Each structure stands twice: as structure tokens, then as C-alpha cells.
Image 1 (tube, one colour):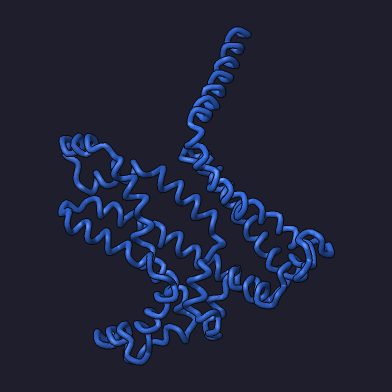
Image 2 (cartoon, rainbow, N blue to C red):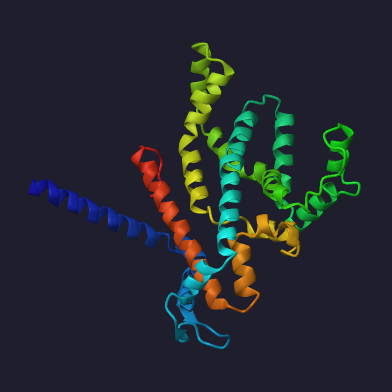
Length: 322
């Protein structure tokens, strides 16, 4: 037993030496990592020191960490604010819609695209689906305002032409439509881009599996379910874990542009999310400690959900992040 432990220990030390030896031999390649490491340290780890502002009364001119300590005062203020519950509700609803409707669609799109045999059409559809991702939310929102306008907007004109409605619908004057607009614009803009990773996972599936299924007489639907989707299941689970971990992120840019920087008061009841809540009450009013406290709350909740979803996935024997 001791001999085996000694051998295992010796093998571990040898592997470590081999790793460092290879790194030393590739010193010129390792230097290429330095800019990336510095970038992560400067913009991801050093700013974490600023979370102490959430427990202090920070004023402009104060050095972070040396302001008056107030404990959980800003957290209590945030939870007691009358708009916090509304912002939390809107955030969770919008994120849930994107998770349970918006998340499966890129998977379905990737699977259906894989079934297309006519390569020119396949490449055209794939390219066109990517293009909206590169349009800024400023341009996208302007386009939506024109399409959904009550004064000659294409969508309203079409709905009246087919007899669905008799009068134009005020999509941006009635808050009840905002969640649907948010979901649809997000799907339109990000469908093709989000499908890239699933398309990549599908291309790694061995064609032998499809040929074997053809010999066994499997239908196209059966091959899609039992081969394509089952083979990319680990990728789907990993991406879903990331989605759960960001459930309190409702796309600040999208919300701000669709509400004209929250200037459309008619949409506030359905559009005010945690990010806009923090921006409005924290950054815009110079309450930086309040904004830091709210941001820390978001990060803690998202991190806890990430760990929880990863743990649940592992319990069911599925793919995990770590």
C-alpha cells in the first residue's frame, strides 16, 4: 500500500516537473499570455476592491475603502425602496421569458439548420441569422419604433390589413406589451449568434452514427432526437447553467434603448429592471455606495444560482462547469 502511495506521489511530482519544463521550454509562447493575464487582473480582480463602497458612505474625492463605514445601511435602503420589488419582478419575468422561450430556440434553429442539405441555402440562412447581432441596440430600437408606430408602422398596417385589429396598437404607449417586445427583439437579434456554439457542437458528431441509424430504419425526427440533441446535451446543459447564473441580468442596453433611456414613463411599470433601478437611483443621483451595494447583491445572487444549478446538474449525472 505504501509502495503504491509512494509511486503515485512520485508520478505526480514528475508530471508537475514535466509541466514546468514544457512551460520553460516554451517561454516565448508563455509571454503571449501576459497581456491577457494583466487584462483580467486590472479589469476583473482589482475593481473587486470597490465592493467595500457598498458598506460605506462614499463621496467623490474619497479614496475607496477610507470612507465612513455604515454597515448594511445601503442594503436596507435598497430593500425598503418601493420600486425595488417592482424592479425585481420585471427582471425575473423578462429573464424567465428569455430562459424558457429564448434559450431553446437557438438549439432548435441549429438542429434544423443541420438538416438542410442544400449548402448554398444553408450558408445564406446562417449568415443572415448572424447579421442582427452586429446591429447596436440604438439602431435596433429605432427600427422597432418605426415598425411598431401607430402612424403608418408596418406591423400595425399589416395587422389591420389582415383584420386582426381595427385600430393601430400603441406598442410603446401601453406597458402590457413591453415584455413581449423585449423577448421578440432579443430573439430576433441574438438567435443566429447564440446558435453558433450549438452548430459547432453538432459538427463534431460522427457521421457513422447517422449512417448506422439509417441502416436501422430510423426516421429523420428520430435521428434528430436520439443522435443530434442527445449528442449536444452536455453543451446545452452548460449553456443553461450560464443562463441561470445570469438570471438577474435583463440586458441593460436593450431596456434603456427601448424605453428611450427610461424617459417613457408609460412603460416604467413593466420596464424598470434591477439594472435600470441601480442606474437611476445610484449612478444618476451620485449615490455610488448605494449602486455598489445593489450591484453586490446582484452578483451574490447570480453566483449562488450558478453554484446551485451546477450542483443540481452534477447530482443528475450531467455535465458540470466544475
